[in-house]
Image (cartoon, rainbow, N blue to C red):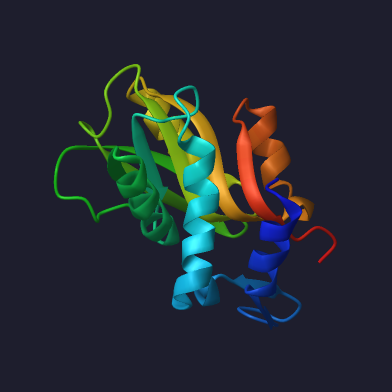
Length: 184
């Protein structure tokens, strides 16, 4: 977790939308974090400052479709490293590797270009939110298929009651999140 003042500042700017996309769901909308330039700057700096030191600096940032693209590309730019997108199946034009994962009702598949990372690359895997952990786990598995080392998973929001962060850490993926919505 990051410094409490940054955590509280960011939490204050996350909009909760009740009963969306289904009754009983409290949707955590991160778009207000992106709309306000000061808040967006604080958000990106919170990630960049963590990964600036030599021992925490990735070789590549990978972003999960789609909000992970927004965060990951900016973080990569600030760290002066490359960015690779992990996309939903059928969206990448070159040779890909894919990983299918289970959803509450069915399954989904994500893909990565086969040349996106090199064996041994230290990769920071970024998304906006960790819920069940399925998408981030699929991204981790894809990167590891290509020989990369996923050094950490990073997200703005963790919803620990849905079990994703536990599932990911149990699988050996260290996590860094800025706002925890436990008990909500």
